Length: 94
Image 1 (cartoon, rainbow, N blue to C red):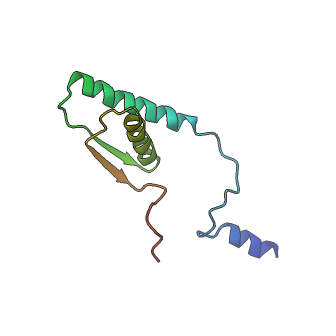
Image 2: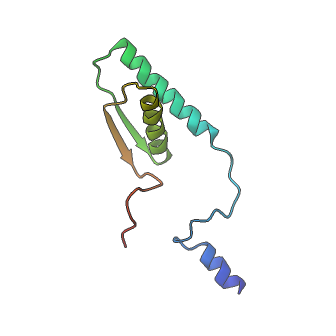
């Protein structure tokens, strides 16, 4: 049934991609730029407190920037504030 199939595709429990989307390379570049900014602040003022706030896709950029810094053994931001991330690491609560 075509109508039932359309409703199932739009269901909030269906996580399948049903449209083409552009590549998200700019998110990776943004994370590298943010990591570079943190490194520069640490170079100029090593004892400065750094707080980063990310909203929606910005939460992913902030987390990736932290991972990039950690991967190189560098000091990360002191505080991350993540608001309305599009993904969750917690189980779904109904």
